[in-house]
Length: 92
Length: 237
Image 1 (cartoon, rainbow over the protein chains, first blue to last red):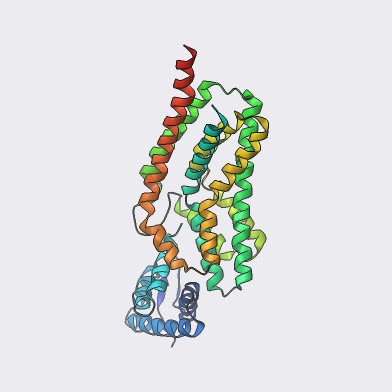
Image 2 (image 1 turned 45 degrees about the vertical axis):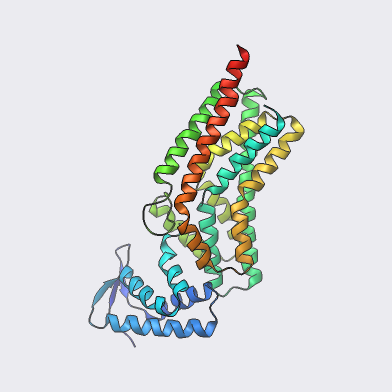
């Protein structure tokens, strides 16, 4: 599903929502907490679906919004991965 | 100052050095990206090991370089004004640690400017070769020089005052102990612990670590001041 939603990044630039990019980041964070590949893929699909539904009537959102919504849904499937996903930009 | 007391001071200074967290944060991130990118266990081991070696090597260079400068300038008998200055540095850094070492929000975000943090984050994410990880380990120590300069200075001053053969022992003790926190995280990652648990522990205990580092610097400063300044003054009367 391709969504015409603009994502405003923290540096002020904007780009079109890329489901594949979100999927990859969710898979990566699941793998980094040692989740099996299959579980990581299934979790990423579910989270991306939930984010896509949330985006349907929103033409423009920030990357922080995407991260917050994705993190909230990820928490239902894999709390530890959600924690690391949330922490990603505040470790250093 | 006797050899056992000198070695204890060096070990304590190194322990305070080990409590600073930039290297640990970067090692945690490096491991997270490597595991998330499905790198093999061997590759993960190579990257993290090279990071730790880089941090260890630059620490050894810094402590030995500072010792050399102090020995060249003052010989084995460092003037009291230099000891007093180093104590002042310890107290100043202790207050700075208490005031702004960790940012007052979620996570383990440190005092460093956000632009620098983003750069380090991006570099860590882009690291895929052992040589890059080695360089990253070096950067992580240099990046925290404003804080580690205090324990490094006391360590170097104490090493200079040791007999020649014990100087090497002092350098080794400082380097090994200052790497202890990094080595513990390296072993946990290698042992299969998840990064989520490691990061959770770090976040839950960050204010304790902050308090302990500051208190340690004050305690070290007081001990050195009493031992080197007051002790000499009273002994010389």
